[in-house]
Amino acid sequence: MPAPTTTKSACSGNVKSLSSNCVSLSNTTGRFAPFANHSYRHCTILQPLIYHIPSFIAIQALMVYVWYTMASTEPATGNAANLPSVEIAAKLRAEIMESLPSGSRLSPERKLATRFGVARNTVRKAIMILQKEGVVETVQGSGTFVADYQRPRLQASFETARPLELMDARFAFEPHICRLAVLNAKQVDLDSLYELVRQMEEFASDAARFAELDARLHVSIVETTGNPLLVWIASQINLVRGQKGWTKMRELTLGPEIIAAYNVQHRSIVDAISAREPERAASLMKEHLETARLSLTRAHET
Image (cartoon, rainbow, N blue to C red):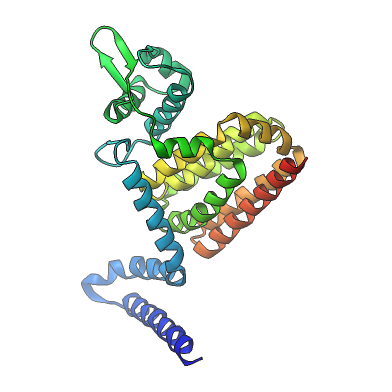
């Protein structure tokens, strides 16, 4: 049909135009020459992303939806959020919602810092996030207490999500995150990802420890984007992975064979991000999530 052919031709023309402009940049001489190779590299990476504008729009729509519905509870941290403090705030929030009534006193900062293995300043930032959400109140000289607040509607949705529902959400989220990681990951980020992969291979016989490192690796990939909202969404996904239903599924699915398969897949994903191959990274992430979903489906049927 004429219309689709024209659209495809126009899209192809735009991509060719982009490639032409990038080549022109690579041939630049004079005082702009130092920037030529940098521009060409990023244009080369961006070119395949042109074909995935619908995926990009879907991610943006998800971000806008979460931002709107969670306006009253979004961590107001000013600049880019500190990931450890966001994660700790999420864990404390989950504990409060599950078992701590209004008026309950939280453990002192020193004990929380020891429990989570972080500095007291990181715990203080996490508590500040919860204060701004209206979840806790700090009384000078007395401590931090659970406030009288209403349970956020979207938070409840995350908590009640079933494992297979969460896998569907991850399918819509994580492959495109890999593309963004290719564009934004620095060498220090890549070193951190490889270290997590190494630790996962080391703890292949310890399912509980492996699961913790697995969750951390996926959050770390999101962290490389430098986008605090995406990091926050990933932290909410991790909340679901920490629930009892997920613990049961982990016991049923994380055997030696599946852990070995996950380790191969994780290393391949990080290799693709390191090699700046966005489509390969996204494809490998899809393959990994398909493996995980199949494993969960089989466990659910038993």
